[in-house]
Each structure stands twice: as structure tokens, then as C-alpha cells.
Image (cartoon, rainbow, N blue to C red; front, side, top):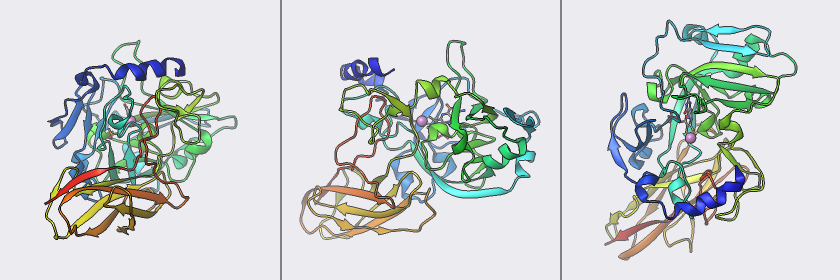
Amino acid sequence: MAAGMATVAAAVGGVPSTLLGEERRLAKFPEKTDLIRLTSRPPQLETPLHYFKELITPNEAVFVRWHISNIPTSVDLNQWRLKVKGNTERELNLSLDDLKKFEKVTYTAVMQCSGNGRRYFEPRVFGGQWGNGAMANCTWGGVRLKDILNKAGIKPGSVDVSFDALDGPPLPSVPDFVKSLPIDKAIEEDIIVAYEMNGTPPPMLNGFPARLIVPGWYATYWVKSLTEINVLTKPFEGFFMKTAYRIPDTPCGCVPPGTAPKSTIPINRMTARSLIIEPAKGASIKVNQPAEIKGIAFSGGYSIKEVIVSTDSGKTWREAKLGRDLGRYSWIQFSYPWRPAKPGKYTLMAKATNSIGESQPFEGLWNPSGYLWNMVQKNEVAVR
Ligand SMILES: Nc1nc2c(c(=O)[nH]1)N[C@H]1C(S)=C(S)[C@@H](COP(=O)(O)O)O[C@H]1N2
Ligand SMILES: [Mo]
């Protein structure tokens, strides 16, 4: 994979913007509100930023991302089963009611696509040209994957667990969307099979009737409309682990812009990031009036310790106030009371740091697939 990547990235500069999905029109899909359409088949829909004023993202506004066009449009719960098989003492075929008999776990976690913010990469890279709206903060309810695996009985010699779903390839030449986790990761306490999203069954497009939640990790692992869990004695080698969704094997997951990594690893935990939501980019603000700077910050499973805000392009910084803490997987809201005293152009910035010192770079970190975007934003606003 790595060898061809540098040339691919370099070529994107000359690609017409329509091929990069630049036509960002709103579209309405079943159970969803108007979202920004990147593609229709398969659906890739982005959330307009104003929805992130809320601590919890409503189901109808949550972004949508499918890889292959054969996606489920209805599920008969009398037929649907979650099969657990492979290197286990027994095979399970769980109905939704069976799943609900396990102990229920509920928490709030940010779901973010690996390619969120890809459109800001310089040089540009191929793939869905997401702005910052391929993320959501939802409360997930479901059952521990660990409890399901223990019920099946994991046999010695297990190395990976793979996850398959209702969506299938339209042609045999198209790889099926199957993901895997190493066995030690799969039995972590907080990974769940969720049948609730903000207290109701998830919309079809977000993985009805149940999906995997790997809190702190990018959503590529959050397999929707789950049907099969397979415990494996050999490393899983499917396309979406071996070829796609890999990052450079360097401490930053990045390489010099436009170059190919020497080696890669599967993408995993999310980087720390923050986003100013208000005032929006390009907003016009009245001089000498209170204008609160508000936003959100999160990281891959470690609580946000601090958010600092600048109103003068990063020359001086002030600590923002953090809002209600919904746990280490949730995003946290921040606010800073601002009252601009002079008219002019202002560049607003915010920088988050988590409890293990992970923060955000001032220059975009680059990798050929456009993952891990977390550069400190520069939001220009006008004060009149
Ligand atoms: N079955 C299935 N699950 C999937 C995918 C998919 O294509 N098929 N895409 C993954 C990726 S890359 C992302 S970003 C999230 C998106 O979840 P959402 O559509 O609920 O926002 O689903 C993940 N789970
Ligand atoms: Mo994704």
C-alpha cells in the first residue's frame, strides 16, 4: 500500500473539486434530518456544525458513513441473530431479546470517523472530503462484548476477534466490510454491543439493531448492524484491516507531507482535539458586546484536563471554563467570555490537553489516508 501513496496524494492537487466531493448539498435520508451529502450510494452524510452546540448529538443529526452500497434498509427482528462462533466452547445465536438479558451498560462516548477533517489536508488526499462534522457525542446502551464472549467461552490460542455485519459487497470483487480487534482489546471492560443510541434503538443508517462501540477508538471499529462475531486463532487479514485504515508506524502517526510511510499499523485510539462552535467561522460580532466563545473538546479515552483559548492568532492564551463532565469518553463543552474592545479581524483558536498530556499541533500532521486530523483551528471572525 505505502509505495503508491505519495504519487496518489501528489496527484490530488489536479483533480477537479467535484471528484473530491466538494458539492456539499443538504440531503434528507430516512430517520435523519437534513445532513450534508458527500455521497448517496453508499450514504456518507455529514453533520452541520451547529448541532455541536448541544452536549449530546440527537440521533437524527448523527453523521452517516457506509463503505459498500448493499446496506440494510429493514431488519426483521424475528430473523436477526448475532452469531458468536470460531474458537469458542460453544456457538451462540443471540436474538435482540437474548442480548437484553445480559447486564446493561450505559455511557456517553464520542464517535468519530478516522477521516474527520480530511478536507483540510495539505497536500490534499483521496477519500471522503469530510469537514469537521463526521463526529457525534451519544449515550450508548448495551451489553459488554466481554460478557458475550465469556458466555461463548473463549478457547486458548485465540488471537483476534472479527466482526461482520448485514451490509455485503454488491460484487464479489468488492471486499466485505469486516473489522477485527486483538483478543486482549476485545475483552476490555468498556467495549459494548449497543442496542440503544440516546435511549432509543439506533436509526437503520446508524446500525440498527445493534452495533459495536469501541470507546476512545475511531469509529471504523464501531461495526454497525452486527451479525457475526468470530474468535480467531490466526491474525485477521481482511481488506479493512490489512490494507485500509492504517496509519504510519511513527509516534505521531504522520510522515512528511506528500511522502509514503515505511511501515503502517491499524488506526486505533483517537487523538486529542477541540473545536470552536461559536462564534462560527466568518461570523460578524458587535464591538463592546459580550461574545462568548464556546466549543467542545475530547480525546481518545483520557479526560480533557484543560482548554486554552486565544483571540489574537495565538499570541496570548487564556484558560477556558469546562462544562459538565460526562466521563472520559464523552466530549466536554468549554466556554470563554469574550468582549472585543476594538473593531477588526480576529483569529480565534482553542487548544485542548488531556490527562496524559496529549494535545493538538499548530501545523496539520500529515498521512496519506487523511486520518487523525487534530490541528488547532484558526477561526477568523469580524468585529464591527
Ligand atoms: N457494517 C458497517 N459498519 C460500519 C461501517 C460500514 O461501512 N459498515 N463503517 C464504519 C465507519 S468507517 C464509520 S466512520 C462508522 C460510522 O458510523 P455512523 O454511520 O453511525 O455515523 O461506522 C463504522 N461501522
Ligand atoms: Mo470512518
